[in-house]
Amino acid sequence: MNELEKDENGAGEAVLALAPKTDFSALQAAVQQIKDELRKRIVGQEQLVDLLLVAILADGHVLIEGVPGIAKTLTAKLLARTIDVGFSRIQFTPDLMPSDVLGTSVFHPGSATFQFKEGPIFSNIVLIDEINRAPAKTQASLFEVMEEQQITHDGVEYAMGEPFVVLATQNPIEQEGTYRLPEAQLDRFMFKILVEYPSLEEEVAILGIHHQRPAVQQELEEVQPVLTAQNVMELRQQVQGVHVDAKVLEYIAQLVVQTRAHKALYLGASPRASLALLTSAKALAALRNRGFVTPEDVQELAPAVLRHRVLLTPEKEMEGATPDDVIKQIIQKTEVPR
Amino acid sequence: MPRQLILPKTNSKPVRFLFPLLFFLLGCSCVGWAVPETAPPAVPGHAQPLKLRMPDPAKLKALQEDKAFHYQQDLKPDLSAWERFWQRVGRYLNNVTAARSFNVFWKYFLYAFALGVTVFVVLKLLQVDLVGLFGRKAVPVALAYDTYRENIHEIDFAALIEEAEAQGDYRRAIRLHYLQTLKRLTDQGFIHWKPGKTNRSYVTEIRDHALRQSFAHVTGLFEYVWYGGSALDEAHFQTVRASFLTFTHTLRATA
Image (cartoon, rainbow over all chains, first blue to last red; front, side, top):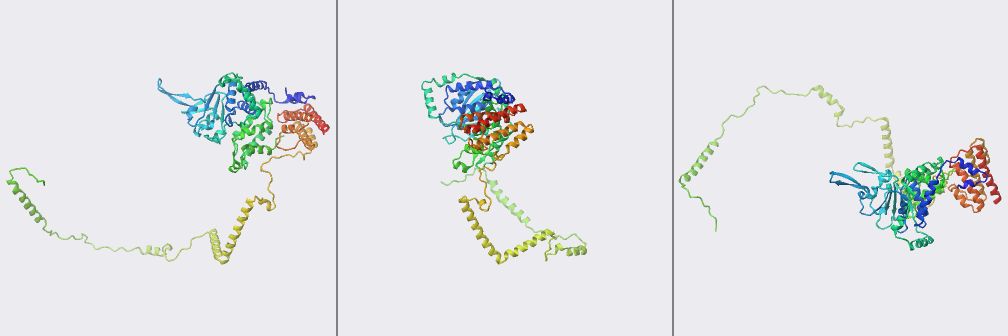
């Protein structure tokens, strides 16, 4: 029940009657079920789960960054299990080649022809673990598939199935044996989610759950699928219908454009960032059972959308500033449309 | 042991006479070739006298009169008025720089320039606002692209709400009611107004529970009308307006 319906003088009902007609009850129920499944195994990480769901609804890819051992991979694997679609996992290593990811042509002696053998990227949810352990050559092989959801091999285009979502994890770039992702690839991720260490209470809860837990594989198999590929596509269609007022569109554009003129930033965000902010804000509004986007949604998602798309100037980096600091400053200085 | 040439044994009598005969004949032929020739010397076959060729006097005179062949004196180039002007300027500058006083000027100019650079570097290192020194104060904000469009403390809400209602622009009227509410909350110290804050930020800023609930409600109404794109008619507007008036009464009671 919407809070406005509790209004005594009927103003809430009047406004709701005029508001865009949207029914997100199916989406709400599905999201709640997914969260319940995840909570059985994952402690905390509420923001991570919310943003992963927003990305799936907004047709975006997600980069999850955090130190080892904070359930980045487990969360991504569990989420993939809750959706009844194809799932594959690729462990990126320094010697991984593009053909190991995309696929390669194999000679077929019977017909004396080459046949394309699909690589592990041909799936619906692809978990790329430790993406920054592979060199730039292998990382660059993901450019086309992440943006156009297809690959081109020997002049032939191979389309991915729908939905197609890449969930990648990485350790912070300061870690040993890692390669910085190219800007062009970072731009293809809708969100970069920073995962922090759990709090003391959460750590205790994790220990409690794992004290008598079953084996990891058995644990994964217990997770029940909640959505099918068809359901996901229908929900995406519904999210597309969320209303965005012209003032909110201008607000999104202002936030992104300001990253290009900020003196603390060497590189600003691209128009792809504006689009990502728009589509993800629509998905977040739908998750909150609203048929329209508010500046609040935009502000909440801006750091996750922008932080990997901007580069600090060397001076600011030396001062210890982070992209989040600059994004926060931009948000504070930009007037909220009202 | 030294090697010896061993010739084959033959019946060699005719051969012994053959070699002296051969040398004799060769000697005779050489004597015959050494005889000098007695042929007469060659003479030219032309019997007629040679003609003496001289240049055409008319052409020679024309060439002598052509200025291009007067190598002893330089020709003045054909200059335009603009080129002549710059030539004069150049000559003038040459005269000026050749003067002794000009060298003195450059000496002091270089001293002044070095002093200026030193002062500039020191002021920069001390992070002194150079623009401010000359009367214009630098912009204090960090960002040059702030988009503060409205100050709620300077808006005449009563007049604008009346105008919006008269025009039937009920969405704008609701917006003005909400901005007026924010102003009242700020004036009474419940919230701290900043254009970058969201509506929900103000809701969480209010500590009084009842007032917060009431404000959250009118905020929801405003958001549905303003961001949701709802087209209000007069009847709906009056209902929503009543909620804002109720909140105003609650605010007065709380204060």
